[in-house]
Image (cartoon, rainbow, N blue to C red):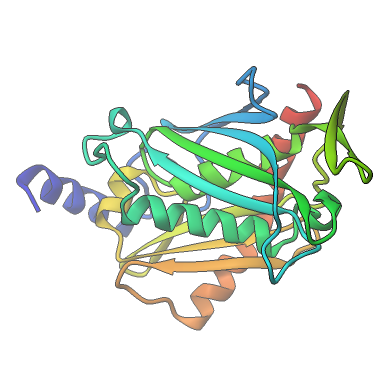
Length: 269
């Protein structure tokens, strides 16, 4: 750890002893959130999210392909994350690194396990043809908590997605694309809420400085019915049972606030 990082760590720890955060927020307070949808003209759906100084852009593209052999009656959804080098001096060009892979897996699991998208409705011909939904994430500016910013951007983009209708001709075995569009069948709005644990304190929506000194991180994704669809713990530290219980309570409350911001953005498109 360099001198500047050591000074910042000591500063953050001293403030936490006084019940304060470096940016003045309460322990359970998010940075300002801004959500915009339909920001990429040629995508089927898209969203841009700014959480504090963290910015994420998500584009949705749809294609037609074969289902997975073990899931013949379900459409396919895949998530890819690109950490744009301009977003952080620690991001480098090239294939996805461990951070990009972890981010893609965590947000994908939160969406998939909540069954936010009704994949059965994406089937065109059972066992043969289904819709394939590509979720492309671009991190534009990294100032901490990429998990929440990305998860929010993905669900906003999915909710704004409109697919061209297709008709399968059984006689010719060909697909006809109609000049009509239908919304992606999104049935739930899962929202991730991330905590950084520094010593014995839990901080919601950690910024980059806080992430750099945290002992552990916990992301809890919940839907509007109060169900937990995904939990991801990372870094070396640990959480006590009572800390996890408290985190779940906070996650449910904060997710409701964030979900309302997403719904407002989609309605105001």
